[in-house]
Amino acid sequence: MIYLKNAQQLDCMRRSGALLYDVLCRLREAIKPGMSTAELDVYAEQLIRKHKAIPSFLDYQGYPASICASINDEVVHGIPSETAILKEGDILSVDCGLILDGWQSDSAFTVGVGKISPEHQKLIDVTEESFFKGIRKAIAGNHIGDIGHAVQSYAESFGYGVVRDLTGHGIGRNMHEDPSVPNFGRPGHGTRLRAGMTLAIEPMIAMGDYRVAQLDDGWTIVTEDGSFCSHYEHTIAINEKGLPEILSFPGYVLTEDAE
Image (cartoon, rainbow, N blue to C red; front, side, top):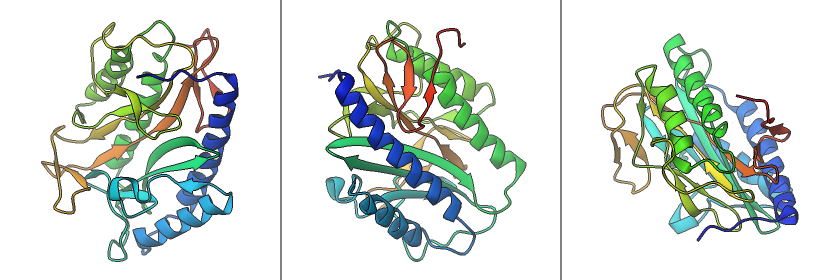
């Protein structure tokens, strides 16, 4: 079932998203060679609880941390560890969610650790832009397939693989709500978009093939061919005008005359 949010509920989700935006900005600033992903996880939980919010990932279906920290060929769900030490040239995807006053927000970014190769920076940049291509289609009256097609066609134009086994999702009082939001699809297909819908859109783009596998820890997803992967995510709403607003990127609203 898809839950449409009213104006008051969207305001609650804006506050949750704004806090998460601040948390992720601080995490991004903290990342440096030589630190462990466990250190980053501790810092994230401190920032979240400081503002009377709850880390939504911690203990979710048994997940043991407040963030997912996925390095290089790890697509998503990398478990922070004291033995996972960031090195110059790595790329790190950080995924984090929180609950503020009962409302969820979910967001992710990928960043280079120290100086990285131009090829890996391009992967990060294309992944981010594929997200923005996707949300330009998140307009009332369009379909879920319009979002996925926009992400897929942009990323694949660079020869990248668009991960298919993992998708974005609806979000609200629960982290995962209907509908699923794939990063691939056909225009005009899938659930019709309506004002009041709130979605987590999250392209996961690999330099090589799109196929993935799960490690023995039961969580970490990696590319089958070992290629580096980038992840970018925001929580969005389709507002009362039928236009997309990024709740976890305060102030970003698509204008009616935008592409």
